[in-house]
Image (cartoon, rainbow, N blue to C red; front, side, top):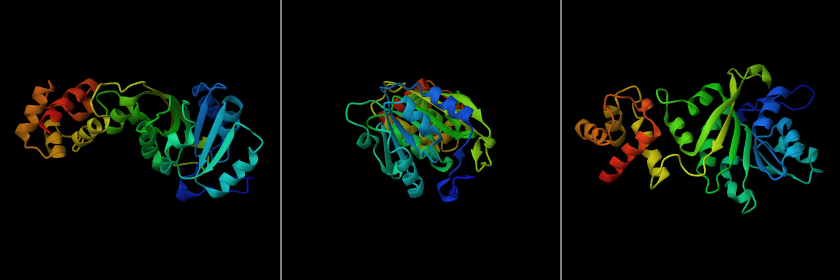
Length: 268
């Protein structure tokens, strides 16, 4: 970034937020109070961090870049509510860094190439966040907030555990260096329990993922391919679940995914 003496590292997918208006939208969406513990993923140059330490009771910043981590540690060392962790977020269990018994929120302007793994990390954590506000590529934001008719695996997986909504769209000019894609801020209002009741969220999502094996084909074909079934058995399972076998996976409601899962589970 000009004047900082730092260069972004392409290997880490670094694009630093330089738009104060977008920063303020993120902070506002996080609905912070002095009681909140916040995990900030990829704080970078500290544009968000500076505001987070003013609003939250405790900020735990996780930064993989050694140089940025040292700079931020020095910059905020006098802030008693700030903790710097120099590590890869994907190698950390959230419950290991948040004090036991405390809820936490996630605020992140994360590298686009690891967006899905980071979302997966938090929604499958033993102690899930109460809320997440995440900057991501526009296309991914549209995918996680999609309605039936445009659903994908990531749509179902995130909507099983949260109610996601796009807070604002973010032009590439809001970053330095400018990425080649536009972005969006997504707020994930985490649910106290999965949106549908199943005996195993992990097995449920495995069936969903396998059912998207051929998303442009009829569901009977995609399901047969993903679960290694013959077409007749696939069609029978869908009929027993009350789902038209000619539909596509992208059209199913969460309740229909549950009905399909229950029929598949009976046969396994």
